[in-house]
Length: 413
Image (tube, rainbow, N blue to C red; front, side, top):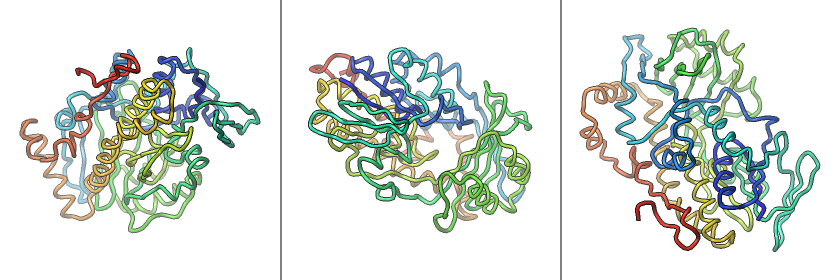
């Protein structure tokens, strides 16, 4: 059975790994001319995603490439002393098994684990798809035409496969009030195990390095009064908007948005947007990761959700013997609750990460102090969020699909 996966970032290679393991013939097409090394930003893998990469035999590699961030140090806009927080204490509130890793490093590990058994087509993209009862005829931008049994879009927030199969992105995207920008800069602050930054009303900026990084990343998050007008490929317009919304904020921000922004080796800017679809499968086409159910970049645990979604999709296809009519609905049922809880959490997280008032800013500082002083079990109880809040990832149970189509069941059952 031949399956085309569009996208070679995170969800695509995880999906390809498991499909290949279950005996499917997999082709991954990626618009970029080579494996993306776009600077990237730090992403989190929580318990279910960590369990999956462990089953893939990649846990040691991921642990070796962790960022090593141990401290967060933030100033508020009034220029007072920084407020420090030990990262490990906060992480233990959220998850019992976690790794922070640069997105590019994770992508490289996943690609290396799949490149020998999976066909990769770099520098190309899906141009058209025509489905009939027996398969999907695909033409690529490069002119080639091939036929596949199934097509999976794992091509991110601005998914091309989703557009072709379901319609315009605007039908499914919901802006949740904020924007995110990341750029690669020299590590002139000498950061290795910490992130330093400044938070003001409706905006925050930070810089962090990593244990295995020669450079650093500058991160910006802000909440404007209304949705911004720009194209997601218009970099100069994005830089102009970033400068406008951070004007007057102190600390290192003037330098970051001056000389560092001008010479940044990579730059990323996008809205914090959710993809909300009642179903992310149609006929012989389905979606995985941000393409189908992005909860919001940087606020909803989208990387862990993408890893879990890819694993479940491959597993349900294996359990159904390749019958997509059974596998796709089973896949959506299996991760549907996780998707919905991630969306809800992301909306609240965007508000908490970017304080919308002086009162909210004060509350963020008090939260940092509480994390520093209160034992982890007490913190978990005080949040009162349980499986529907900060601990939602650890409440996800994974099936063990390796036991065969007739016996796929939850691990430990």
